[in-house]
Length: 310
Length: 251
Image (cartoon, rainbow over all chains, first blue to last red; front, side, top):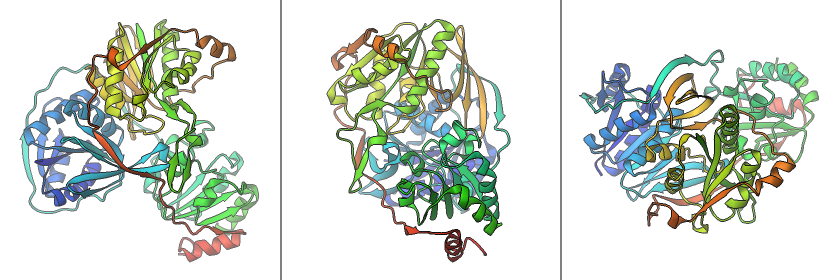
């Protein structure tokens, strides 16, 4: 057991990993090392947070080629003598986690939302059974790859003691050619960051969307939805989906309109501080997980609520 | 060319009940992973466009043979199944070795398609692990696939951007749940599915060693405790009063 290596292509997520790595290191007495790939900006930022930083610089490693990034990390793990690798569980990180774990013959856990160290082992919590349960698991192999869900840890704060070294690795030929990379258009709203969310589901009619939006605006919040509203009905873009295959949100307040409350949805909103649920079906499960539950017809309630708040 | 779709049998999550915070899996029927069905549909569409042969692969307990019929009905031409009741609840790394060893038995593999996460565990590792074992390029979170001879044009959809990639075949992809709308097989397709060829493999047929020790141990698996007020609200004005008391209105 010699150290923890962290890597994410996103600086913001790398800072969260640094916090988590220090938590593990404190209990296990391990060194924390950071790998950056072709990003001066990230390398400087990590040094400013007091991290022992290694920078692979100027070598062509295509981030779109997961196999190539995994090879780079495998080499870094060997050179830096680290046993635990922390990655972010965004899409790139999750894809990378499995490939790297296979290379290292390591156990791997992804979408980890919290961790604690007990008896030298890192116990990881993650959703299981489609979000119905939270399982606590630990990796038994010496080498471990753990991918942490974004926003599960605070970003590390600035501190002294950082260092920066360049690192060179072997680079092979790539089978993947990037023809084009384009930013996703339009919607810049990040529902994961919203303090207040109004979440709409299939129990609502499209004509009432304007009312739901107006309620969200009055409260200074954003509008979000259950999966079918975006994928089937297309009333909202897919980055507004709350749930297992969408976003996991932790707003101060969630007002949930016409959502029945299946597990795959609930997992995306159950960390909200306060939940208000309005549904016309008194047996809807969502009412059981609400702080304030209202059985009512949305067609009647929404105009009234919108007017009162407006 | 053979197109491979890997699918996982999972308990039907809609029917999993929670008793004293423990999930009750016993008696819950099996189904195919929900995103796996998108992987299958992607495979069927590519098969139709290119005249390829579509093979579904899966590993699990003996029930898989029945569960996989749905995939054969929907359009897979044949199935390669690793069946052993010992495989119930196996971890991702073992699933990956079994699937990779099975795929190695198939010739002229052009594309291996997975869903981006399984229906139950959703750890998203198996596709990446299989790509590594087979030493193939991979692209995850795919929203579009076009095959063009010996290469594929793949669109990967990340949180904030989309990448259009050209990849040398053979390769591994994992697809998103919104890449397509899976078709529902007709009654006559379901009836014919039983006659499609199935290659049933036992663990001894595969060139791998099953590790004695698990890489992951599960310490607990419980429904989260919910600590909600559960106040029944009768009117909009009561709701507004509550929101005011919580400090969300009239701040």
